[in-house]
Image (cartoon, rainbow, N blue to C red):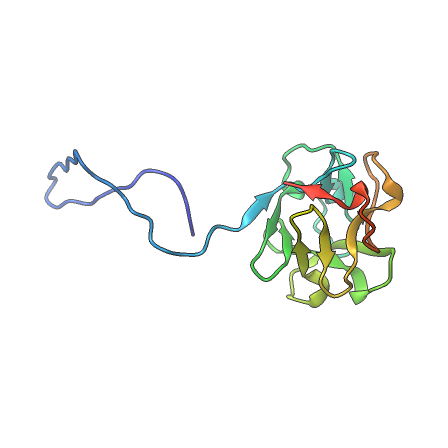
Length: 160
């Protein structure tokens, strides 16, 4: 795990340790996972779990960005988008039809919880090939999210 902070060096017998020339070199390792809000390009609102719910099947929405834990999405190496410590963005029932609901569910590694986050801002479900989509090109708080045929719309583009 990567972190930032002070480094402590233990000494013996209450000796004072003084360093005039200390340098720390990072060792090779994986980069930290990308984490933070996902902001809808069209609305400027964040991908949000309503009412900070942790109930499986809670459909996600857009809402004013507020820095809450229900808006902090971590992109895992396997393709999952995790919120809280154990919930993942999930296409309910492994559905692959346009208009299928997107909700949170316990992370389980299923193909319906794997996403490709593309450089153009689209987020595509690996199982369905459909884009994460703000329903009806809505921009208001509480507008629900589904997966839909990728069409280049700004309601299907997200930023960090």
